[in-house]
Amino acid sequence: MSDQGKRIAVFGAGYVGLVTGACFAELGHTVMVRDVVPERIAALRRGEVPIYEPGLDELLAGNRDRIGFTLDVAEAIDGAEFVYVAVGTPPTFSGDADLSAVWTVVDELPAIDRRIVIAMKSTVPVGTGEKVRHRLDQRGLGHVGYVSNPEFTAEGTAVKDFMEPDRIVIGAFDEADGDAVEELHRGIDAPVVRADVASAEMIKLAANAALMTRISFINEIANVCEATGADVVKVAEGIGHDRRIGKSFLRAGVGFGGSCFPKDSLALKQLAANSGYHFQVLNAVIEVNELQKRRVIGKLTQMLGSLRGKRVALLGLAFKPNTDDTREAPAFVLAGRLLAEGADVVAWDPVAHADGLHGVEQVETVDDAVRGADAVVLVTEWPQLRDVDWPAVAAAMRRPIFVDGRNMLDPDAMRAAGFAYDAVGRAAPPNGSPANS
Ligand code: UGA
Image 1 (cartoon, rainbow, N blue to C red):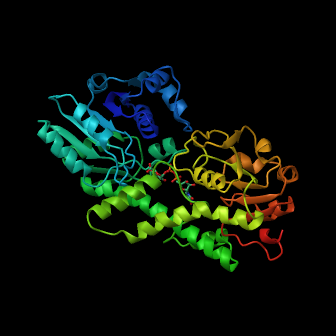
Image 2 (cartoon, rainbow, N blue to C red):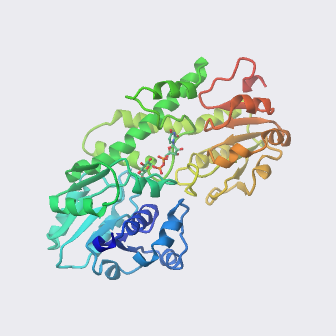
């Protein structure tokens, strides 16, 4: 396939940029990844991968001859036929997406006279492509193409999501540029959705909004289950069999976090508001998620009374398993609330760090976290938690109170292990409720 390989510059060596670069190299293209952080580029050149993403190390190692790393724009662009933009678009104080890194890439492009296509991977507001097109034209770069090619990769499964996607979305101003970007994906078996640029941009935002809506929906169902004696796990199973509803993204828990959902929900809310539309469902989705993260505090207070001086162990800091990413992680909100209530907070996570969580004691093992604790909250469903000797944990705690924030463990087994076990949306049997323990 390498005889058909193209030359691709990728701007941004974060999760999205590295996965995009590594996967394109795997597909036979020659890739140069550019970032502005010298330590990051130096580490990548030494063969060290600065993020935890399953499968990425192997992919980068296996394609070393086809992927390089640089700080230099000219070196990245040299000979490139495509420029992939994979820089961060964090929220500003107003909730709009901060596009300054995107504009820097556009403005730093040298005044090349050959045909080159900019492909946008970063999540951007609808209308961004139009604005970039205008800026390029103003700079006399009318021959530079622009394509929206949003990413749908989830952290922890990003490599698989890129190589085996549900679909590839391509929005182009010029159909030939769209064809060229489609051709880059040769070797990937997936439906290709061709669209105008604005629709491609909206597909990305709408997909994430739909997923978040499902989560907040099932979390509200869970809360009603708690109040009425139903079990949300059974309910999700029951509705998930309906093909019109489907099974995925119906896991109730302590709310969604991460680098995408919270940011993208704000960006879409703001995008709508800026155009004069009040996006009611999305506003509710965001608010339900905020409340969901805080519900655990109410449960702990109900079981323990005042939390002042109580030792609470958090199992998991990452916003989900198989990543070291703690951006907008529910564990951080929980820790903040617990500290504010005067609790002593101890946290365990196999990969993620409590950086920035002042006042939280981070320990290396689950045993160290739970010893002498008044309550344990399972916040991230790390697979290794299935193998913990829970009766021993219950015995080591001062009070065996367990809140399973991800409905990961078997309620009967946990109660048999000696816990006053509470989960999300799983009503306890009449005599086993934590409040009665
Ligand atoms: C998400 C989307 O799943 C990707 O398709 C998208 O490309 C990406 O955002 C992005 O915009 O870049 P990601 O944030 O990595 O990916 O993680 P998810 O697996 O979607 O989980 C997000 C949050 O939702 C986590 O906190 C997770 O615990 C929570 N979640 C997920 C639930 O609470 N319940 C569920 O049923 C599913």
